[in-house]
Image (cartoon, rainbow, N blue to C red; front, side, top):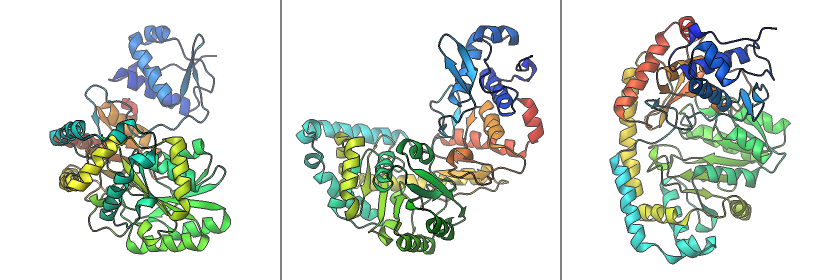
Length: 461
């Protein structure tokens, strides 16, 4: 039996990625079956007149995608079992790639300088408790007071007793899900949601049900229908622009979701990491239903990425559960980083950085509107990204690969799916992850790909 081999005539630069794409298509098409042993690096390199290093990088890319597995002493084998979820962003920035895949705020030298100044201040003012204490209740009372002040900027009034300081939003989300959704329970979420939800469901042992969305976010009737026919413990929502489709949920829609949650007595987990960055937004769901909402926010996407501190506000009935689960998963937030966050909240630096970010990201949206003038995409003036539906007949995998071959990284919409329902291919493009010149260049590549013949692009790989 003849085993499929890549066609050297179809290999384009960068060769390793083009080679990996050929293998990926053969695996998806069934030309390489599960368990098939791939040629050794040396043998394939000789056959294709490539370097062993190029073949090794191609195999590493296939391993990263979860399509093959390497076994020491035996070789590399096709694996078609369900792989670990692939993050939507590049794990590292290689060479001259314009990385529009990772969601970051706009950053300039000023942000680095602010952090250096804060660390200099910290060297002179670090409390002994921040360096020497193991007890969260000794370290964090001052920080919880600052958290209450900051949550007020987010539109939420709460008590210090209801706030946990976390190592950013991911830690806050994980703790909230652990507190609200015990193993075996079910959590509802938007069908296009947070990219960590699917793996978190696997790791924490809860079931995830992706629900339909429209231009206003999660559809309340769909949540109501699920609650009436399933044992739902919580619903996870991202109502304020941080969701992949950059939707700002209306006041009426928020009220409708709260009404469904109250009627069926389910918990709401609200991810609001952009907080006060979004001007003129409705009140958080946590302000509408404080008795049942676990509210997560943080500083990393609105001030400086290195300020990995966030807040989790919980109703009285969840305070003990949140504290216990935070202890076993994180013990406590990093005190020295919390010191910087508290100083910046209290002296106004945090809000100044938010206002700067708002102006900077609006400028990035102007660039996107100019370069992608002929494209229809979803955005909000203060979102850190745009959501770009692809034209009919275009696949995400091909589109993302073609952009990558031109040294532009974008995030496939598949990474954000929480539902197996019919899917309209789309990509997420970060606007803040690089400088303006690179953003303009990267968006230009995307604009040209949108106009290209999809059949021609497929053959060019």
